Length: 147
Image 1: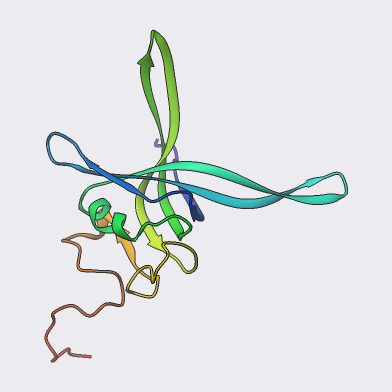
Image 2 (image 1 turned 45 degrees about the vertical axis):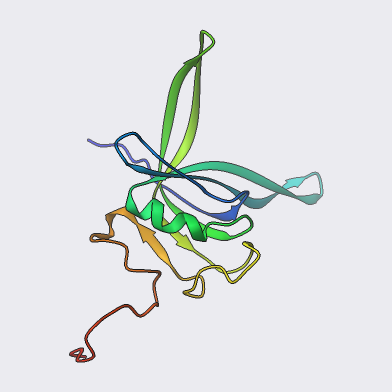
């Protein structure tokens, strides 16, 4: 029997996404999102933000990072992973969201137009094939579509 490890978050980027490459050429995009909520404190509701570090790997990470600007609202679907390492003789760990799908949403950031798809671009490593541009963008295709 397999356990369930699934997380879906919608939040805003706290900084521009960063892209780096491993020695073998694997693309790794790291970003952090703030998910706003509220909680009751006494008789009043108080706004509260939770912060999550996220990682996306592969070709889709390389494709999406240029649209991931501070303040941009994104949806992230993936799983939690715990990284463990040793630093100065101390064992350390950190839980991150391992993003399998990232959706660019409306509003916020980037100091510009954001995604050319009107913020509807979805990026997934499991969507198969290469990156063909954000959703809603016409790419090269035949005009004789059968529907």
